[in-house]
Length: 99
Image (cartoon, rainbow, N blue to C red):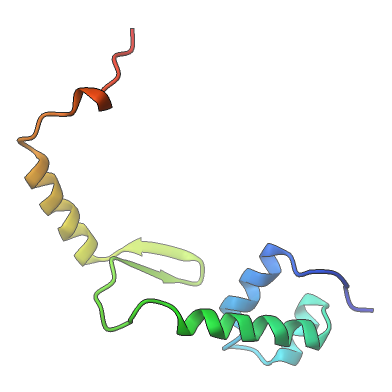
């Protein structure tokens, strides 16, 4: 008997990251959910993928299977920002003295 009720956050995350690797039937079996529920969320996941930022742009972070790392572009950007802000004095509104 398959589970009923709404999908949990973990199940949604799993479907969103695995729908390209597995069939709907395989996902339904792994998650013990009805095929119709999985199919609905796969459609949502596909829609999310089409609305992601343009992949032609250079990204600052790369992610794969749940891990995220800073790319070379992000590291270089951070270095540039640090160099530009080196001579600036901190704003007194942003500084707290701890006694």
